Image (tube, rainbow, N blue to C red; front, side, top):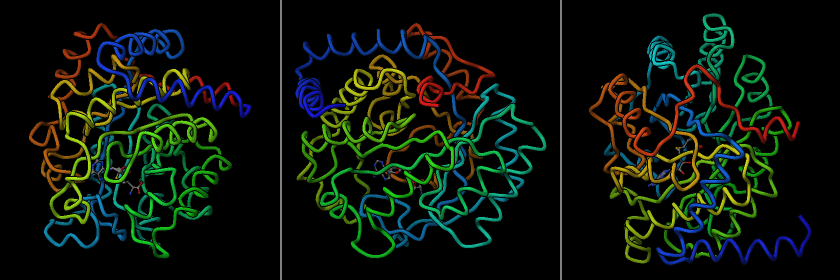
Length: 354
Ligand code: SAH
């Protein structure tokens, strides 16, 4: 994009983010049209496996941060992760996301490698693997790619460095530059790269969010997952809650972010974040109508779901995986969309940039 184009887009994006409900409806309809034209009418599912809430990091917003001693720490065994992959496969979700708190000790890296090898052996490419395991070395990311992982999600959280340090400790474990560098490495290694930001978190302005959208475009990412910030009582940002907007405001702003992004990057995959559903029971369906095309049903064993609380009021804690499928089918038929069963559902953007 030229500087003039960026200027023009900033203006357009700001108009969408700050639109009133009536004007927003027009933008949302445009975004939906662009979705149907560029990524099709199918919504793709990614079975989400929350592998562990053990984490070395201490992010000020996150419920599984290292300093939260009021959480029961767990880690699924390799067998439990493989069973969850099988659950996803049986539901015809041809894709899973393995997510966990951040760790990079040798035994953790080895465990992921071993899971990837086994998935490759059992399914031979019939199930796509996305990892969401935080910052890792180039060597580790190369190893996991060689073993079959194809997509990686690493939210930048905020593309504004100053704001990033209001949400994270300013120490060696939490450097903005390393997070940014990791996104670049992921791309070089060959992953389909996903990132995203928190929406409506303390100290964040609409200009920050417009800059985040421009950042996604400049990074030329393939996938985005972004959702409303939901304050967790056992985190430092909880006290700052009064400086941010109401939950409903953050929800509305998140829908506008999705529509704005769809206008800016029509052929990428955009996830309807689970945190939307923590605010509104129809949150994910509303996101699909706003321009999202990916939903991540939880396939974590039910006994561990409640412990993976990034934020309070997490939905679907009591359901078993098979219940999610029926529920989502009914919900998506209400918004007139088909489901891409047994397909990886890669973003057209990925193939075009290749
Ligand atoms: N360890 C991985 C996965 C992190 S958890 C990593 O570092 O990428 C996945 C995402 O949950 C985070 O990137 C963050 O954006 C989101 N999250 C954490 N706390 C949240 C909160 N209080 N409200 C909304 N989203 C939150």
